[in-house]
Length: 186
Image (cartoon, rainbow, N blue to C red):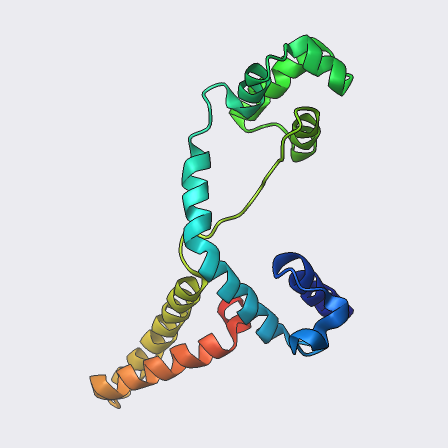
């Protein structure tokens, strides 16, 4: 429970920009259920998704030699100068630059290099589609699998139900799964 509360407080303060010590001012409850926190997070992500996807599309086209080399060069900084700032050897800087392009540099190292270049390191997971769409697709997939087995068994027992009734049960199952998203990932 403490972890959930800590997450919610983090969510309020850092994601929504609300001072958690003054929740009543914002008419927010002191304790929020996991499903409300999940729902609020999903809504926030879905609202910001177009902007996040646009940013991701821009950032995907990184410079051919990587961001480290591009920023260092734009600043007029030599690799020995960057090496001196980071207290590493010049060949290490070249290894960092190659590692960034290959995707093998660690986030810790990239963070230290970003600080030395007076740059921000931004790492983000950006959904390919809205959370609502992802949840619906997952619920529909599970419902199809479960309904397929039931329909097959009923057909074998000569108790087949008409397609309209099957569709209604399918929709009920999807709705049930969507009201409790944890069931979607069992």
